[in-house]
Image (cartoon, rainbow, N blue to C red; front, side, top):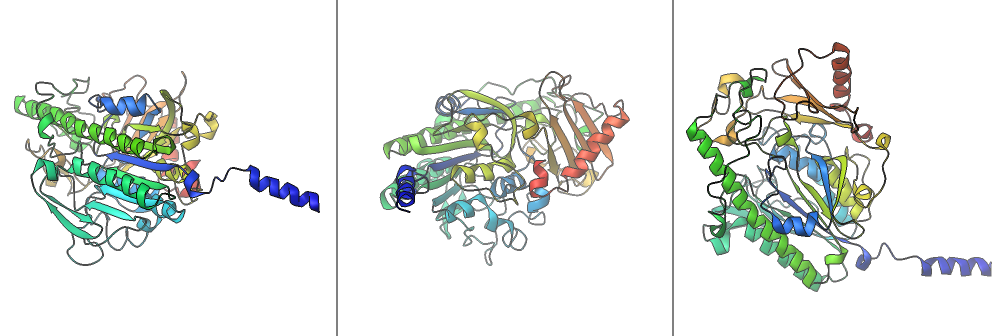
Length: 500
């Protein structure tokens, strides 16, 4: 009996106290808006590449499951595909931050609620969901602070750089057009740094979760004054599908006309301004690192960097938008550094926006709930070996278009130069199966069904990486049937079944 007590005492003394607050890592999640990776979206970010890519892991096959802001951000928060969290598009009717469906259910089960319950101090600063705070009264008004956050600064509405309002811990705070006081990316940086210093000072024993969600490089594409002309004269990448008119695409894309000089120039200006806005995000990254270093927190902090979806600038004659099931729209940057994460390493496993919530929970030492459709990539990032049979080789891409069918689109058929973000219709509604098996013989493809028009697109990305030729008409019928069966399975999956 005495020996058993001595062994038990030795057990408690010897084990590191992994659950103590002081030993648990801090977590920083930096989320941008509309930042592509396929068209060079990381190029203007020298500090980020030095601090993140060279000191951490770059996921070369990171994707979103839907290429639009509110549904994708809802997937980041919940770890669920959109058919399970219910936010279908950027409208209230599409359940973007809606009072009843979103706030009464999915919003109560985000990574923030789990991490806060684990004893973390939590702070969110920046864009939340597109329809957040618009109601003057009721739960969806700016007084609403989503569950799980100790400190809250949420943008009311969609991305802006000046002349906006935020809910600062439930109180409306209006901002104008003074660069030093109001430029939103810098304000996010300032409040994030304050959170790091205040938490370190006032709650020294508590680990923290910080989210900095920038508007950049989303429209209205307003660079800070010092970066306004940094990229003047450059133009967007002239990829093989740039200004390429395709007759074998679904209606919205097929109706786009070859861009004239006015649209080309406007698209190129957007490209330059987008890169200009990203310079301020790069400054934010550097300043957050400095604050972590000054407070002695850097070596015990995981920093994750990503975007809510990609973008296209002239591809398939669309001067500037997302919303389509093409690589530049669905591929995203995903970078992670922190304790135990190897430096300057690239991982090729498929990681998704739905994986972020379970990964953040795993970083905090928690167990991701079974209700999440995604799975943690934390161990992969730390160098874990994963057999191909143990990780996904395909995933669901899903989008529900806004507007009425065909020529009663939001803007139809071709938007004016200042309305690039309004190319959408209800018949731009689709589900796709994106497959990436790896290896010389592995499939690299995307198969899509446009549900409102009974139209199909299928691309072999090994032979056709820019998705120029829709091969659905020449594809083997048995092969297509297998893709359709798998797609039907994923569009109905829930929790664990989504990970099989």
